[in-house]
Image 1 (cartoon, rainbow, N blue to C red):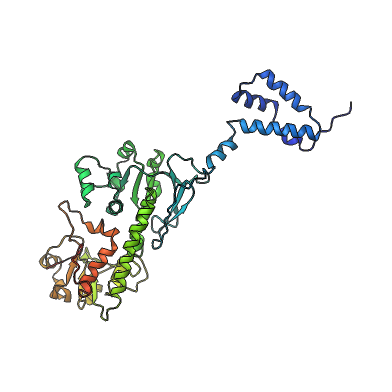
Image 2 (image 1 turned 180 degrees about the vertical axis):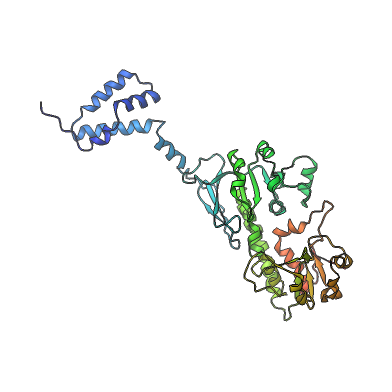
Length: 437
């Protein structure tokens, strides 16, 4: 008997063995074993193009109906609902440390060099609640948004929350003492916020019990993502906030947009930040019109080191925008420059103003002099033009300059201009700064 010639495309169907048909169809459909065998026998005798077409059609219907097909499951996982959940988008104008991409039901945050010296990028997928995870983000942390609970590890993070008016989401802090936000303090006193420790003292067991939607921590050169492996394994995402490496005050404050994206508050933050940005730029332009720029020194000697802001730091930008003559303005680095007393001394002798006189809450010149009698040689010491940023230190010892001041650069700039060029802002009352008498 002449062998029946099968179409070439029959091989596409041949892989679907009787055993596969039996296994798949009997698992997912109420079909008897004998019925399946009969169907398979009929299918296998088709030998012409028309027969193949029918066979291909049956196969397609069969595969489409198999609920266990991995291909179908993966397609469902990545399929777009077609609904754009994020009609308002954030645009980053100043910050260099993070980016944000929008998709229909999720956002992708990239935190660039989260630990300053590292070139790695930490990627986070912000997934709208109730939607399915997209493919292609195996090594990313997923954060369901909007988050409902947050553990914040620094004063800056509390400042971000306060600017958005979202204090209610805070359920944990690294330290309960150093807080300035009145609403957060109320929640602490009501027992609604837990202390979880930080750095090597981080209480992972407590965090796992609390299971917040997100832990926001601060990146540093000595930190690594591996530090949070236990929390990640427990399903708790940890977001690295590295605003402190930004080179401008507006860039630093713009990290509020990252938290806003996590809360789906884009519309609010876009309007809020635009007003801050407009006011900051107005003030900076005002100070650039002055004919004379007073010279300044900043900081204090501590344990044989005097740290001054490098020229590419956000603090040096504050000084430029306030119309100051800053000696280390042209150093090409971020962060701080460590000097000894002798290196600062000749500059300090003739500087018109002495700003940021240490972290301690110095109330008078005598307390400063007790640290080093050579301070009496400084021009600013003699004239009384000494200012600290300690005006808003509360009875808990918390300094609001590092909290709300970090996200209100326009107010900090107003203070600096009022100090250095009082004629430009005669009605402005200092908010974060105070004169040390």
